[in-house]
Image (cartoon, rainbow, N blue to C red; front, side, top):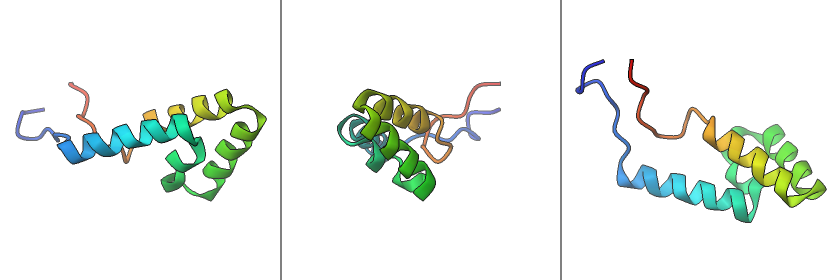
Length: 75
């Protein structure tokens, strides 16, 4: 992959990513709102069962989110 084909994350994208990670800590269901109602309800259930499982599950979803702007892996 050449340097011209790479997608660069802008400062706005970085800011949004930081806000999502902060939401994972403060209130995990808000961090996964863009993934749909079922995902949000599952995270809410984990949060109600214990705050730590909700935070961990929200972080896993945010880390694996394909809509999150990031640099593509090198080939």
